[in-house]
Image (cartoon, rainbow, N blue to C red; front, side, top):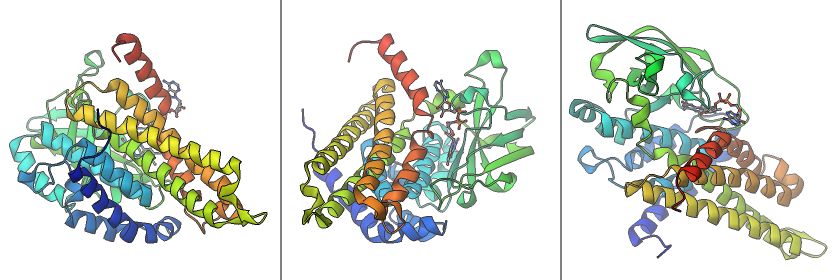
Length: 379
Ligand SMILES: Cc1cc2nc3c(=O)[nH]c(=O)nc-3n(C[C@H](O)[C@H](O)[C@H](O)COP(=O)(O)OP(=O)(O)OC[C@H]3O[C@@H](n4cnc5c(N)ncnc54)[C@H](O)[C@@H]3O)c2cc1C
């Protein structure tokens, strides 16, 4: 058993790390404070086709796997979580098109999605469909060769820059659940904007509530089988982007803390010399390593076709909590200045908190993990 990355994976990670260091990190605090959309960063990621990292080369993608997706998202999130979030969700939408779309849909959408000239956002959650998405109320009714959509979607990340929202809607009766939900590519222009929230963090990419009123969608915008949209979604594992975002924040918090405590002096010595500080920093490093091992294991096993219910839940719960804990400890170890916007650490905590909620609250993943463990004890 080897725990190292391959040479290609290391080179790939270093490419994204370098990009983050030079293009994201220096701008991150300003983008967050001014709630400014990171458009030039997305343009550059598109030019590098990192926005299509896992998409096949025949559409211009990089043809990488889920491990590389997790590596890339960790790096981007270490710079600015909301950049990683928009890209992770976009790649998730493109993957649904690639895996379940028709040949025509793949040819129409994927080349432009690879370069981020066509941007996808995810419309799954609703006001009453949070932890339990099966309670969604949006409907799509067939009318000859069209569908008529009514309802709303809540928290559509990157809606304002997106071209299409992959919109999940009920197309069958409740007794058929979960085989009663279908996915549609709906242009963002067809939605009405209802609420743009002010949020604790993730400030530079907004996630508004939007609604659909008798919106007509042609049949060729149905992605995947009718009634199987929600179930098919469970077969793609681009959700590893959520724990990967957690690792990025946890690692950035650790690195900033090592640098700060190694430079800051009290009682005539660097505060990193205090045993109490060393133990805290050691704990932070342990969290990063645990989160990364769990997340890369989930990504690798998903890539190789195994059921990763258990592995994914563990990764999601662990890595997102690691982000919150490390960010919190980083502020403590920076002292008063850590509580200001002079450093990144206060943003890390605000951004990290989203991750224990979004992508499904950790409590739901704890339930899934428990179910997986009681169903099979094969480790
Ligand atoms: C900034 C932001 C961006 C988002 N982006 C997107 C996006 O792009 N696309 C999208 O579709 N969705 C998105 N979401 C939605 C996100 O996935 C949901 O917020 C999340 O699934 C939780 O749903 P909810 O907020 O309705 O919480 P609820 O389901 O109402 O849960 C509230 C709380 O109750 C507790 N809880 C719930 N169920 C259980 C349980 N079974 N056991 C124990 N405790 C429980 C948990 O503490 C949970 O946090 C985003 C959310 C935010 C805040």
